[in-house]
Image (cartoon, rainbow, N blue to C red; front, top):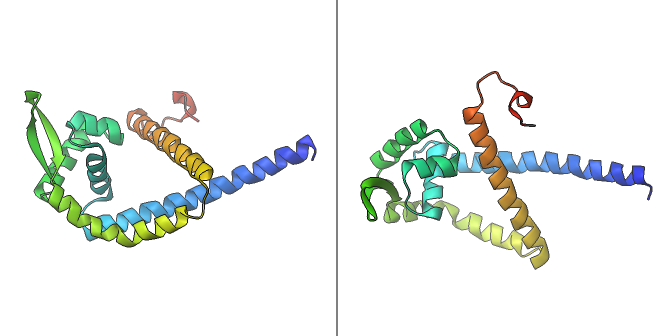
Amino acid sequence: MTVAQGASARQALLDELALVGRENSDATVLFHAAVADRLGLHPTDYKTLGILERLGAMSAGEIAQHSGLATASVTSLIDRLERKGLVKRVADPKDRRRVIVEPVRDRVDAARGYFASTRKSLTALFETYTDQELAVIADFLSRNARRLREETQRLHFTPEGGSEQEHGGG
C-alpha cells in the first residue's frame, strides 16, 4: 500500500467515524429525550439527575462544573428537580453553611425501570468485543465525554455570533 493509499484509507475511516458518531449521538439523545419525557422531565434535567446519581451529592457550582451548564441555569434546574421530588437540598455535613443537592434514592431507583431492556441489549453487545477492544472503546468514550464537557463550557462562555476560530476552538 502506498502512502497515498494509506492516507486515503485513513480518511475514509475518519469519514465513517464522523458519520456513525453522529448517528450514535442522535440515537443516544433521542433515547434519553424519550426517557426524560416518560419521567416528565426536560432532557437536561434528566441528564443532570444522572450526574448526581453517578457522582453523588454536590453543590450547584459542582453541578455546573460537571454538566458544563451555566450556574444560573443550574439553580432553576435544581428547583424543577426538587419540585418533582427527585432531589433535595441539604446542609453539607462538613460545612453547615453550604448547601448540597442529593438525589432522592427511591424516586431515582424507580426511574431505572426504563433501562432494563437497554442494560440487557448493551450487555449482549459488549459480549461481541474482546477485552482489549472494550478497553479502547472505554478510553474513547471517556476522552470524548471530557472533550464534550469542555466544548459545552466553551459554548456557554463564547459570545453569540463569535466564531470558534476567534476563540481558539476548531
